[in-house]
Length: 170
Image (cartoon, rainbow, N blue to C red; front, side, top):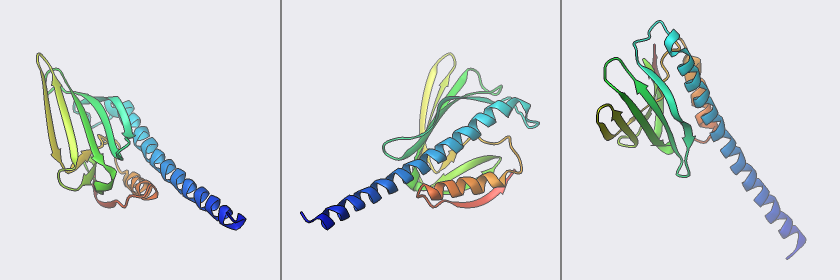
């Protein structure tokens, strides 16, 4: 093999590997941002003037799995039902189309690509799985935070996903 051809192959390999690492770093930035905001939500949920009695805690933080699915799991308690619920959501990152806020921040995806599994634990244990297009981030306490919407949109874009930002209502 000629030295210049060998050097070209090495440079191309380094370039491809570098781009891949940059892509993974941006996905990690997205996860870091979502987890930071969820932890802030949990910390401030009881202090909110809009507190309605529902509380959440994290069972599994936001992650991106090997199939590029965004997923997380929370535990929810409420004075409106007995026991508690374990809610797990997942959506392929490539299917997310919009971010918006209507009471809480929502990722809108293509139809039937968001899988939500709710396990209600009281005297019995019931599990229900539904598919839809809304992925709830459970971020609702902070008001006048449209800048967070822009930051999320830019972070998705840096990770290689174009996500529009539509409505933003408190």
